[in-house]
Amino acid sequence: MLYPELFKQLEAVRWNMDSDIAWANFDASRLSDAQAQTIKMNAITEWAALPATEMFLRDNRDDSDFSAFMSVWFFEEQKHSLVLMEYLRRFRPELVPTEAELHEVRFEFDPAPALETLMLHFCGEIRLNHWYRRAAEWHTEPVIRQIYETLARDEARHGGAYLRYMKRALTKFGDEARAAFAKVGVLMASARRTAQALHPTNLHVNQALFPRDTVQSRLPDPAWLEVWLDQQIQFDSVWESKVVERILHNMSLLMERSFASVQELNRYRKEVTLRLAAVARDAGAQPA
Image (cartoon, rainbow, N blue to C red; front, top):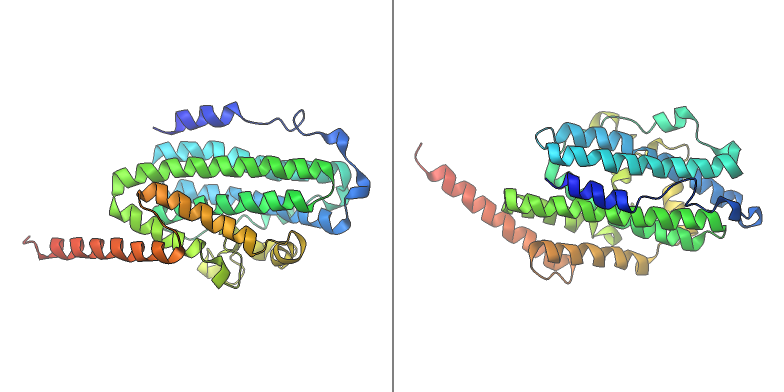
């Protein structure tokens, strides 16, 4: 089992909201109204770890190890929402999200293949780590800068934990896992070709609720993410390249094969898919 070791590792570096955040360094003159609004939107977005955890537990009922790890991931992700709300409570109380606003992002996600979902959230942690690092640079108020830097480090650690479960899946499922990881990796590393930000909170996850079936679509300001990325923190092509490089680097380590571009990863995906199809054909040709 991976859960006991991951618990110890994450417990060893866990930060304390009261003593590790330098609340006394707050400088009101360095926080704009627009910046404060983005903190509210991020606090609500982080609250969506609740429905994501419910999805993980439902779709991984046969995997008690991973489900137990969700206790750690869920705690730390909800803590992200809480520390952002605590910042607002102290310094911009009129912007603290209401319980109704938080509950709006708790909705059921349609069932999905567990391996693809695992890879999707692995990539999501990489992307969020980079978004928060850029947010820390954009903000001018020192306390919120420290908070975003702290959250970014958490997201990187979460990505590392997911990677451990992905390595385990390769041992258990072989090409089935390789195909699932490569498929989602190609998608998540191709953000420059899409009109929307590629992150789990911005993907459609409940057909019956379409088009209000993304976390972002259920925020008080559904359009805030694109404005935040493009106009405020200016998550440009240089930063997007950093995300793609990290995805490709980790996929190279995982598959023990170098991927210098999304195109190379896509060719590998096709190769593995053909292998799986051949195995299926051979199995179908065998007499009962």
